Image (tube, rainbow, N blue to C red):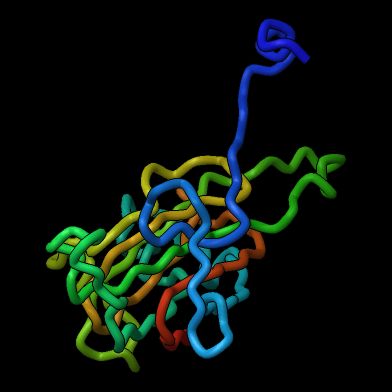
Length: 194
């Protein structure tokens, strides 16, 4: 197909990688670590109206009800002074992907994708949910970006070792949906729902 024909028939192109791109160069990184290519954790959950479908931070009273997952990063990435920038030394690279349930199977019900996103907060206590006061007086460590009605949103992050609370949410409160979170990392890490 010629370039002109391609442009005539398509108005969007999505480029995917087979695995995580820790260094942001557009090529999937393959990390050989004791026979494993990378570390992956998968978490499943659901937003349930009246229970934990709190929506975004516009309504903090509801936002606090969203599911919360703690990620514990203990070992920084290997640092190569020839290729890595100095500010990456001692950091942990992770890729977080939030995907909402395949909703097209319900299109006869006029279901569309919800606007989704996630926020990450640093915490000192990995065994307790973050409170309304925490959200009022602490800045987020990272965000997926603007809430958007895509099937999946993802973000590459470079974080200090420590505990982080990941909060997936829809933009509007009381949206009902199942979701899947995948977290890729170069080194071993832990995560659990709190």
